[in-house]
Length: 115
Length: 114
View (cartoon, chains in turn purple, green):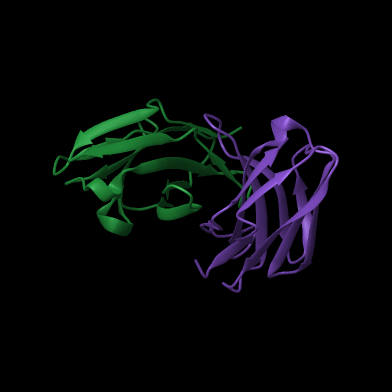
């Protein structure tokens, strides 16, 4: 996919490690999102950024730390994770965070396994 | 608060038969509804959305969805299923507070049997 890319695609980390997930959108959008996808559960919205400013943080534990240096890039920094944090982490982008409604375009996700 | 429900975890249909994936919604005010599809090892792909107007919305890959206000439903349909339609399908509703946040259902796995 060239619209929204995510790296790495797979990540295995220990509970004491620090790692980062990267997302890049090539669509000229102004809004970016992080979601957590676990089996048999609805997608959980974690963070929303509009023009590099965080506009939503859905009670996500502090061991997840987002960063949005510009409107094309989004990071999710991970540290001291728990096994229950193992999931597929999806990045998405849209035209804006208000108005619309705007469809969101998703990356392929990072499959995270915490050991 | 807004939410969607997908009552079926799994739907099986024979190739060539019509398919329906069900979704019901709960929202105050006008609903903005979406369908997405997820293929294995891929992110979600946008299929279609309902904003206002015609109750039958046409989308990608021959899919369409029927909005029914009285039944608060937004079922996804296709007249003739293909094996390649086998995937996980998600219904979503937008935050009715004005933000573009989406609230997703738990997904329905569609299997098209050759």
